[in-house]
Length: 429
Ligand code: ADP
Ligand code: CA
Image (tube, rainbow, N blue to C red; front, side, top):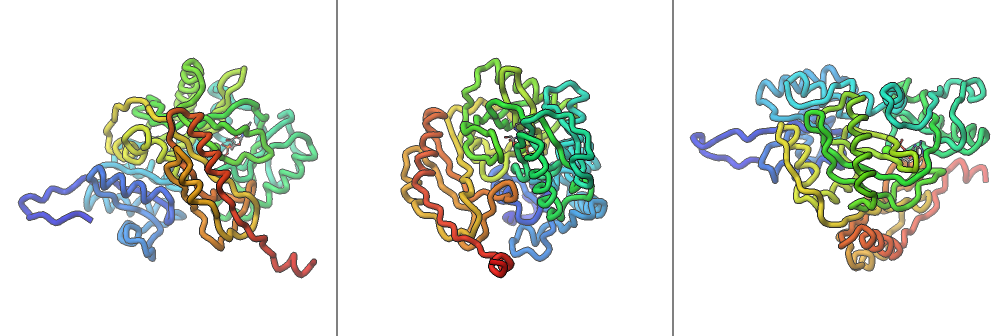
């Protein structure tokens, strides 16, 4: 990747280790960001047989054997040091924290990282620290609902403790709905082989917090929270499922509320013991104040990080890389209004084609329309599903105009989905 120079002028470029599951959709953006910053990046992954060069030539680790993975990273660091260590996804953040800790690089306490990945432990921690969170009960899927103590009132939300992207998150308004949702969640968790036994059998029941929701992208520098942007989620998220759709920025929330959001998130990070790196959070806001729904120690999912580079000049991945190397960047707040629509999966089935892409792209303010799912692939809506069909990006003078452009572009799309016939259902018909 680097150009060869004569021995006299050779200066080793700084290099950063990116720990990423093979196939992470964030890897390409980090590789690009590293090249823009003129640093080398080594990828640690399970990519031994990958056809992608960066994985194949990278460090091969097994996420199931964290101790051995850590040792491999430390040996690689002895051969040539790392200026920083980052993780692309939740599965890699714990290992990244341990490796960076061992090498004296900016990192979070591995225990703090665990809290961001276990909603039940996180809730208990925030409750103990007096952070404003919904009332909650921790339930076990190994026992019937009727045998467990439930203190939360309806409406409530039932959710897994270690999944993401709203998978398995369901609103329930009565005991009967809770019973049904509990069975449905149990089936989702049973099929989830990547989870530990405890993660697979523990679920959370929380009181439903009404109100508007915002998503926050932030960076922590030595414990200090620096908000990069607050996204409004203009579509109501009242359930029964909570599909992510529209994100627009700048937020329409007044300064005072933005300050409260900052303060609540800062308090949350302190409670977890999180001090360094990217934060992606969700909060609800109503007459009783700001409520913390979730704080993750990673960047925003999907391609949505692009929204930030549209506004700030630095990409989110560049900020993360620079932070990992101990560099803090002073940044002016974003000036442009941007928005993204995570295109909802319209129904279950096989994706035949998406019509109207050109019309959608031509809508004023639309920057890009990206379809992520390939033709012929299966689409599964929430709560079982876990992928977005794609993204539409907009940039405009105001967040409202960006939202309008997204809505108009979405209306141009005709997503053709063929029903899927399962063999057993065909036989029993
Ligand atoms: P995930 O990690 O899968 O994103 P979250 O806990 O963040 O799970 O929940 C996903 C979405 O479900 C939230 O963004 C929110 O819209 C909704 N939600 C979750 N918990 C609550 C709650 N207690 N009250 C209201 N809405 C909730
Ligand atoms: Ca979330």
